[in-house]
Length: 194
Ligand SMILES: [Zn+2]
Image 1 (cartoon, rainbow, N blue to C red):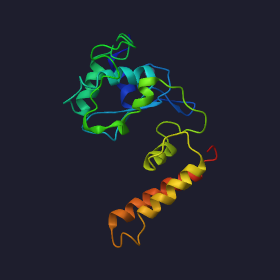
Image 2: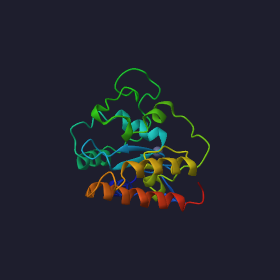
Image 3: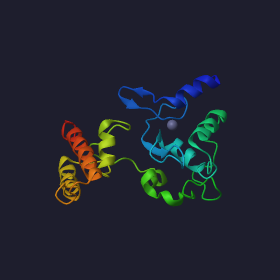
């Protein structure tokens, strides 16, 4: 058993190996391919887990209800066994069933729910590394990988139209949105792998 401090380190900073983000579960060597909100209070901050561990976290989501992000991280650190697959994976009964989670008002957007449920292998095609600039850009475009440059261009056109200065004259927020959209677009177009 590793020291508590080491586990704390693992949880507080992403581990990158060969440019790939590893699962946030302590000592797991799996790739962090599934995101999960850090808490109900902060749905824009994510842990990145492998399938096994996103399911484990998912199964505890109800248990964490009412806890702040800090409290959840404290729980994760305090309970050094949370990431071990001791829950009945595949069981359809009880609160450990990953498909029996109350996502409340947050909807599916903050979870890779369908993929978590089915454990579907990823489709062929380009997908961004979790936590990368390209991943963030895709999230801004509200696109799911795999995508092509054509998909991105199409969405870009629609977003520019929606936030165009001509239809939002003097709207500071629309201007800001457009800047963010343009930055995301540049990042994706600059990526040679797409
Ligand atoms: Zn893992």
